Length: 309
Image 1 (cartoon, one colour):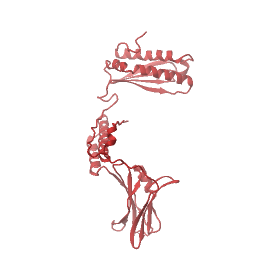
Image 2 (spheres, one colour):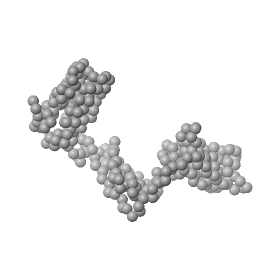
Image 3 (cartoon, helix red, strand yellow):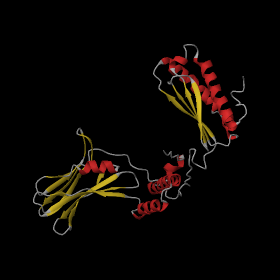
Image 4 (cartoon, rainbow, N blue to C red):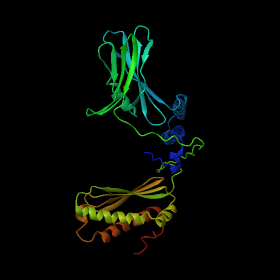
C-alpha cells in the first residue's frame, strides 16, 4: 500500500508538469518497494524510460474488426494524455497489404485501460460502408456518443457525436517548476521508519456491549500513542509497536510477538469477559496490561499516561 500526499501548489502546475511529477512518484514508490522485495531496479528504469519516450501517453489499439466483404479491418486506437482524459480514433486498414486507408477524427474516450477495452467491444460494421464505435458507455441508458467512419462519394469521412461533456483541465502556470518528490518507506522492514506506536484496531464488533468497550479501548490506545507515548517508545530502539484486539478466544489474555524491528501485542477479550458495567475502567485496566507487557519485553520505564498503579 502506498499513500501520496501533494501540497496545494500541485494544482497550479501545468498538466504536463503534474504528469511528470506523478511519474516520479509512481517510479519512486515502486522503486522503494523493489528495494524491500529484492526486485530488478533496471527493469523499472526501462519502464520509466518507455513512458518518457512516448511523451507520457498511454496508447492501446483494439483487435481488428473485419468488414463484411473481408477487404478492410477496423481498429480503435486509444491514447491517454497528461490531462487525464482518453481519446480514440477509428482506423481502417487494408487487409491485403496493411495500408491505412482512413482515420476518423478524434473523440473523447474513457480514462482507463479497462474503459478502452470496454469501448473497443462496441466497434460495429453496418454493411461494408460504415463502421461505428461508442467511445464511452456506462450503462445502456447513458450512451457516450458515437464515432463513425462512412464511405461517401468514394471517400471515407468521419463524424463525432458527443452526448456528455467533461470539465476542462486548467492550463496551469508554465513558469512554475516541478515540486520535489520524496519517497519514504514505512513499516518494520523500512530503515527510514521512525519509531512509532500504532493501534491497528480489531473486531468483530457484533453487539452494543462490544462496541462500548471498543470505543473506550480506542480512547486508551490514543493515550498510549499520544506524543508523549511516542517519545516513550523511542527508547525501546524498536521501529514499531503494533496493538491489535480480538473479541473472541477462549479466555481473556494479552500476548505478544517480537521480531528485530517490531513488537506486536495481541489482546484477546471474549465478550463474556467484558461484563455489563462501565466500559472505561475495564478498558483502562486492559490497556495497562498492554503497557506492562511492553515494558517486560523491552525494559522501558513507566509510560507517562499509565504511570499510576
